[in-house]
Length: 307
Image (cartoon, rainbow, N blue to C red; front, side, top):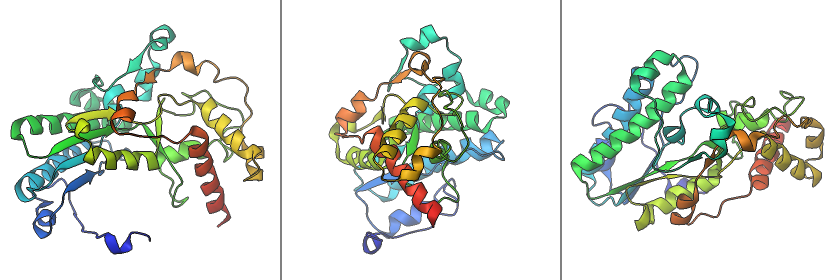
């Protein structure tokens, strides 16, 4: 790997335990930190407090406490949050009327309406995840107000994250949504909701750049940013894959794509827009096009299929 000589690993077995990160910051000095760890939803994660709230909140606060105590030269932290903290679930977005969503726009200062109690009652890992992300972020901002540390924090709030996968087994959740457009799952193009999509996305490589830029931008200190494209739909993915297939880079892809029957033609009326302008401008991002993102995903998956 390119970074082998510049990259070290240290195992934190239970990152939610108080003091779990102490040894990391006692051993060496750091200027900046990126925190990406978070529990993801799966069918077996039905205990909100154990599976989401405790590891999310306590794990992140444990990191902040260790940095505050043992890393006085740290200047900034970039933390991977989620657009779900702002918008809630895809189900809650689609529950709105077309007329309401036509002018609806999610912004950096908005929060989903979920509570820990509603998450517990839901028995839905997805709803629990969304609530857990919100509660974790709220806990961090409360910690920052109480402790007033010498370092700043920036939360990046992506929705679906796409990019060339390292392996097919398993695919991460976001990339699996794209794969379903050419693995035989869909014979006809589904509407955006039926495809399980969230109406925003970011290329993983652009998200990585956003984290790095957040660490050094004075204008990003103690702020939260929706990051990525303002819209995502089934039609956008299919159109991007069609354009890629027509270039004959992966000629077999075209025959594997679903037929467009117009089912997704009203997605722009039903789905809200995510206002990502402030994040793009503040972090100096030049986002990849949809065609580049989805082409790179498809190309890599086909390569992996061939072994």
